[in-house]
Image 1 (cartoon, rainbow, N blue to C red):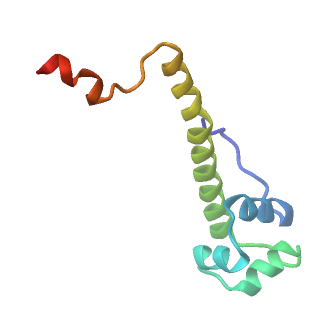
Image 2: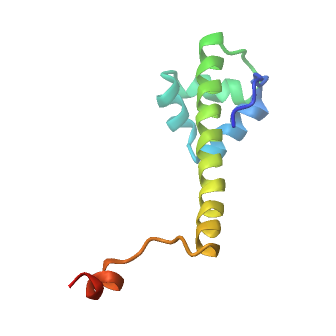
Image 3: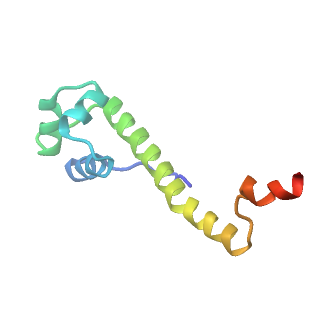
Length: 99
């Protein structure tokens, strides 16, 4: 579920998102279509970023949240299915009955 709020993008939140995504500074620069110098200055708190960059960061954050939710809830669903014996039935288990 996506919350309805905007993050305040500062050096800490930008760096935290980059690390959460497992990206290097150059990865982040490539995806934001900016220079590595820009990433360095934003993460050092030396420069303010344009609203278009903040919008891109917001989009990355929301996509990251969605993926986290999917990873978080998928195993729970599988456990519920297993508990109720609703797992996938292998063809080999029913092959004899079909012949």
